[in-house]
Structure formats: structure tokens, C-alpha cells
Length: 351
Image: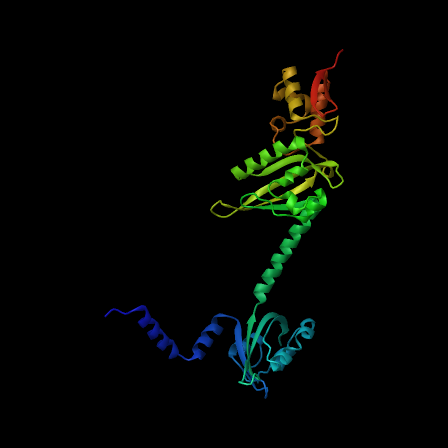
């Protein structure tokens, strides 16, 4: 007759039942920095496993007591945990994390869990405790928190805000966005954030974002953004996809920079009368029949930089480069103008 799953379970139960719990306790303590203790509430008589003596670095020949453990507490944690014994006598379980100072002066972080057994009348009779050394986990958590704080400080020093989206590109609301634009979370959802972007910049901005999202490429764009006051200021935004090993996107992480704080202007827009945009550069070069190499020679701007500028790649260009190009054209009689509606054009200056 074949053995059923139930038969195996019963046989396994008998086998486990035939092993002393001390064997399991020893196995756990050999592989984990953990210990167990027990204490009679009325008499205070206590006992502990070898794991406790090892964790606390106390002599196994000494009697263990909850008071002796409390005496090892770090001074800064002692006041918060002086009530451990009172909790036991009240029949209240506890779960604490604290530091201990061992006899060799080493400091360890310990997680303490205490359960209290009650008699039929609900009176506490015995406390059962477990101590776990969590020093490595605590130090790792502190290290991660320090790294995160360094990241936040760095972002705050260079950007107006950090922003994130989920893997589908849906923005996670950020209160800093409200501080800048006045938009609430409801206003910004479902691409509502675009309403804060200048109407002339919206189509280009959303096109670039969707292209970057579809290609899982870096998103980079410059646009005018409405402040709470109603004034438009130039901002630059960059974001990159965070990916798993299989190249699937986990989320997008980006920053929003105010451009005038970095002496930068957008590549494809004229911000001031002294600066020119990509369309004007292409038109002026065509009017003069200049090659990229000739414009580079006359302006001092590299060919690769001019090519990127004319391609309207959405990142920012230094003012010095745009000014050098403008001056090179003006020496040949080209004038750059912008009418009241903001539309830019070029013209030859009459002799």
C-alpha cells in the first residue's frame, strides 16, 4: 500500500515529537546570535540558555536575572526600559530594541521580546524572553539612512525638487511641486501637471517625455513653468529610468532645476534678445552658405556643439556658446529679432 501524505505527516510528527526541544534550541543558537530565558514572576527565579550568556558576554556559571540584563543597558536607553519588570508583573508582553554595554565595553544592539504566561485566574506566573543581537542589521540600516540623507542633501543643493514616477510614467505627487506651481495632487494627476507649463512649451515637453518613456532613455527638456505668483520662469528637467537586471523599468527618478540659477538657457528658445535659438542658427548659416566647419572656425564653438545645438537636443547650452555664435553671424550682417509675440526671425542689416 502506498504511503499517503497524511501517513507521512503523522510519521514526521512522531519523529519530531521524539526529539527534545533542547536539540532545536541548540541548533538555532549555533547558527544565530540569539538566546532564550525564563523567569518565575513570583519568586524572580530565572534561567537562560547558553545563547543568552554568549550574547551578553556573561559567565555561564553565574545566575541569570532580568535585573542583571537591565543593568547592562546603555545609559541613554535605560530610562526607556526600566519598566520591563513592571510590564512582566502586570502580565503585559513587550517588544523592545535597545543597546547593551557588555563587560568588554563593546556596545551591541539587542532586540528583546517578552511573553507572559497567566494562570487560570489571569495572574502572571512566568515570563518567557528572547534576545537577538541585531547590531549588524542596525548598522546596515544606519548606513543606508546616511546614504539616503546624503542623496537628499545633494539634490536639495542643486535642484528645486526631486520627482519620481512609477514604471508606467505616472508621477508620484510631491509637495515641492505645490510649493513651486500651486498645483494640488488632484491638479497634477493624469498629465494635469502640463497645465503649469507654458502653452507654447507643452507640446514639445510631452512629446519628449513620451519618447524618452517609450525608449527607456534619459528625459531632458527645458520649459517655462508658471510659479504660484503667475510668473513664468525657465526650468530644466532631467530624469532617468531605474531598471532591474532584466531591463524592466522599476521607476523614473528626476530633478527639476531653475535655469537662471545655473547661468543656462534652453537650446531651442530665445530667452533674451541677446540670445538666439536653433532655428535662427540654421537659417543664418543657410543664408551665408556656411558649413559647420566654417561657423565653428569663425565662432570658436566646436562642430559637435553646433551640430547638437542645431539638432535642438533638449538639454541646456551655455550662454557663452550662443553669444559666440550670434557675434559671428552679426559680423556678416545678420540681425536677430523677436517680435512682441515672441516669434524669432533673422534679417540682413542694410549697409
